[in-house]
Length: 280
Image 1: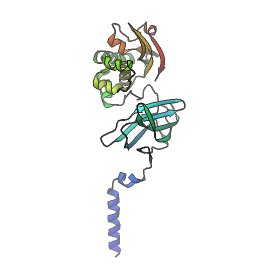
Image 2 (image 1 turned 45 degrees about the vertical axis):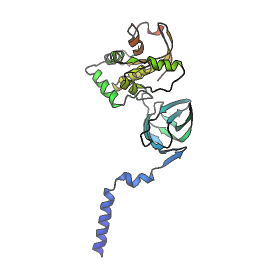
Image 3 (image 1 turned 180 degrees about the horizontal axis):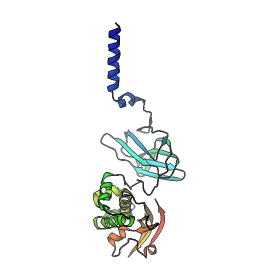
Image 4 (image 1 turned 120 degrees about the horizontal axis):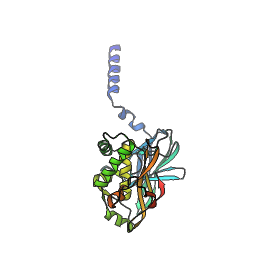
């Protein structure tokens, strides 16, 4: 009997060892469910970023991240099974963040889904880190940035190569701009989409420039404000990058560089037709 008992124990241990850990603990993961959305609750303390994964019965959701009086909305892609996974970089410093999954109701109205808090314990340099629409961690962005800056040693050389590539290879999307003029902002934006479609408005140009620069290890800001070029005067977006060699921020505008007749890489008259409102 003792031999049989020992054999059974050995078989049990062998089966236990080869069962995937995810199968053992899958049911133990704490979930938050609300308003047709279910997510796996992230840990309370995180280091610089948090991953949100789950599923929904809804057609469209977004994620709202809040810290103090700062809030950022993120689009979320759903797969065919309406599952999703989104990594959010916490670029507003250490401390407590409130994160909510927002459920689309109608027009531009959203209601609250699961909400939770996390405490970020790692201070990030926001101008070197992926952020909303600046997907500097995307493989396509990293590959292109590496190719463009190969053999370039200084920050100015790297950004000059990125500036010239964006100016020559990205087309201004006048149709999207016309949609803006009609009050329709329900479009796809950001560095990755701009790289794929090879066109965009000023915000897309600036997002792609920032993403390529950050992927190349250069500190780059995405700047919003007002710009003037010819008959145009209105809301605009451009970039500033930090030159470690010269210890200063340098202005560049790939949009104006692409559609205008002048170069907008550290243009001496830059501040005459660019008026900054915010940067991130």
